Every structure is written in structure tokens, then in C-alpha cells.
Length: 255
Image (tube, rainbow, N blue to C red; front, side):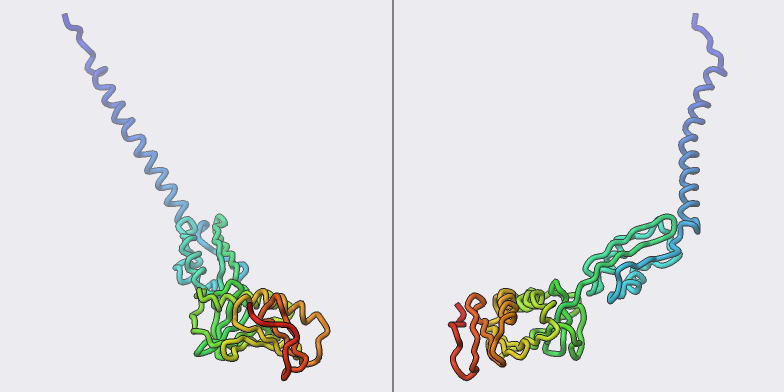
């Protein structure tokens, strides 16, 4: 004979199963509601944007272009978008954006260092130590080496690949502390010349300019005849012309 089951006992698993099925959804709804409440809380809105290291760059204006400002929800702030916007400034070499909970953004900027002015066809370009153009002006400001060589004009933010450009940058790096603010490089035909402490300096073709700059620094430390020409067409064999109308002492020829 088949045993009879209590109808109430048969129904109980179905009821328990239904309750257990709703429980995860209820917990999820509670969690999502809590997250939404916290995320939209005024205590997690940006109340301060701190900018560190920005002197010449327009960092705050760049931050604004990213769409982030005070009142933005810190949880949803895209720090990468801010970094890309700030890095688009020609003066900015690197940038890091950090969230400081509950309500601050810190933007740390490393700016490029201005090194020299290079003359273009339409004006002067201010060049940083890494060779990037950071600004343009009708006339160069004092205090930095100037290269009056009429190279092609370059827009701010661009780092030219021209070898001659980087030869000049390397020379400026060598002399910037000792002579940078007093030197003007110019082309006379195919050769580059400058003047240092009253001495005309023949640099020859604009190659090996960093080596020529180091040789120049060594030579001006010596006692030279007044008005003598320094010939550094070959940095390994420099020469001095006591009488500019006469012959050069030493070979002074490019190898």
C-alpha cells in the first residue's frame, strides 16, 4: 500500500524555495541603494582642486576643459581625462591626478624648463631643455641663449626631430649656467659664430656643438689676448687668432 504524505509537508519546500530566491535580490537592492546614496552624497562631492607645481602652465583652465569642477562626484571623476587635458599644455612635462577622500582632487604638475630662444621665419620660439617649443614671441626675452639661425617655425608643444635643432639645444645645456644668458648664435654662410666675453668664436658647421661648448668653456678660463678670435671648428684642436687678419695659431680645421 502506498503511504500517504501530508499535503502541508509537500508544500513547505516550495514556499521556502521562493523565499530564498527573493533574498539575494533584496540584498542586492539594499546594497545598490546604499551605494547610490553614498555616491550622490554632498560629502563626496569635490570641494577643492589643489594644483601643485604649476607656474607657467594654464593648469586650471585645462582641468576645466576636461569637464571636472567643484561639485563633481569624486567617485565618478576620471583622473585619466584630467591628466590628458593638462598634459596638452606645452609647458607640462608630466602630470599626476590623485583623489583624496572624501572631497579633494590633487593635481601635481612637472613643468618643462625654458632653456633658449631659437629664431624662426616669423618670430622667436622659446625652447625647453628637452627640445620642445613651449611658447612663441615677436622678440626674445633676456636671460637665455639666443640662436638667430632662422629655422622653420614650430608650434608650441612640438619637439622637432631636426638634428641641427637638437645640436643647438645640447650646446645650450652645456653653457646655460656659465654663458647662456650672454650668447647669441648666428650663421655666417655655412658656419656658426658667436661672441663670448669680447672674443669672436668660430664654431664652424653646426655639428658636435656640445663638445665645442665644453672646449669653449675650458678656453675662456685661460688668459687670452684682448679681442682674439677663438676657433673651435674642431673641438679636439681649438685655436686662437691673436691677429684676426693673420693666420690661426694651430690647425683649427674640421676633421
